[in-house]
Image (tube, rainbow, N blue to C red; front, side, top):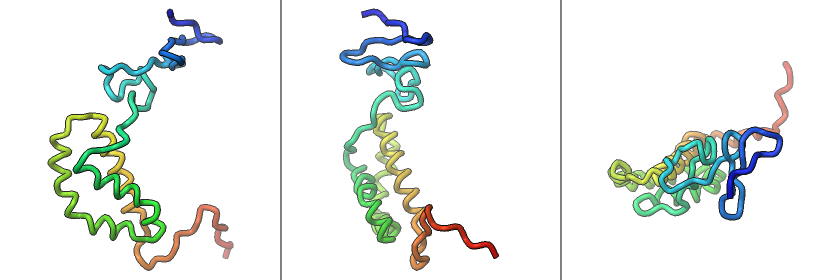
Length: 141
């Protein structure tokens, strides 16, 4: 089926199986296997394909930490959890250097991002709870 003009002008619609996809600043085409992960022709600023949901060993450590992140942050134990697993990070460096799957590397990068942010943003022990975003502003002096 040929591309159809987009109602209102600008861009076009292209059929892809059972759906229409974004193309030419209005709609893009569906990703092809040969497309680079960060091709903007497919989904704009998003990667052309979804990242893998499951990661192989030795990267399971990262998903385990991220899965435990919300509860550990609520308890104030995330830093201790990461520190306790510090030795388990050693095999990851060589594995990452040898990894050639760009989508898997992107997934690993995002997992490290969550872990790093949780580690850095966890309040220090004994500092008490952080004020909520809805906390009342301080009274003027």
